[in-house]
Image 1 (spheres, rainbow, N blue to C red):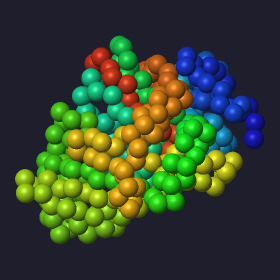
Image 2: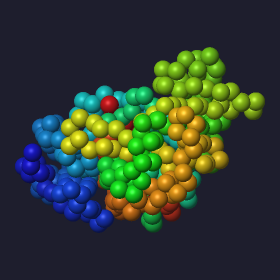
Image 3: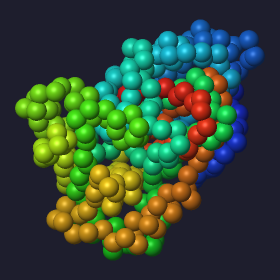
Length: 321
């Protein structure tokens, strides 16, 4: 399927990379200056829905730029134009519901770097698509960098073939400790009551089981979640047979409130984790947010994060099946 579409004009953005012949992100502008209004954009998206979805899979990231998208209500109309089912976020990031299918992105301190991850990678049901909207671009920093997942697997196999295959064959086990109540001073400060939508421990356990987690209650009211075994890599349909680095080893290994090891308890070598972190950063793609930008990410194919930022910064998010 070709890039060309009569309703969009392909452009460029700073930081764009070509990965295996595909532009990341694929940048789409209004075809004509008088077609930048929201109504024209919604019509173009609905008319070319199948083509647009193929572009997300083909390029892993598509950026709509130059359209008159003002607020959460406008963004929600874009999300709903495709008819993709909603999926409720489950995870440690503090977030606030804004409007219908729209939430704030991680509300942790802007001074902190949010490490690269596939959204809800540890949950049994994760979103296929992640959509982000920039309402207020930061004056400095605050990029949402993303990384083609298969490139990490390729490079890790080149450097650590035995370790990769051992982790993949054994699977991975993770643990994470969540407080009872939300702590917005932390980028992982979402309390378990908010995360699981209940203050009842029995109900929380039931919901966790449905998500593929076990709980261990702590004396201070916090809870330790244990997940595993989980895959190191995955291959998804329609993505050229690429082996995605579908895990969060670097983000959780050896941290104060989280851990990652092989499912049988074998420790993951520190040098392997450190080198993986370097490779992920080396393969990252980042662009500067502009007001009104809407970024579509194939959550099965790319990891994403958040660079430290000067305030203000307002990026909203929707997650889709």
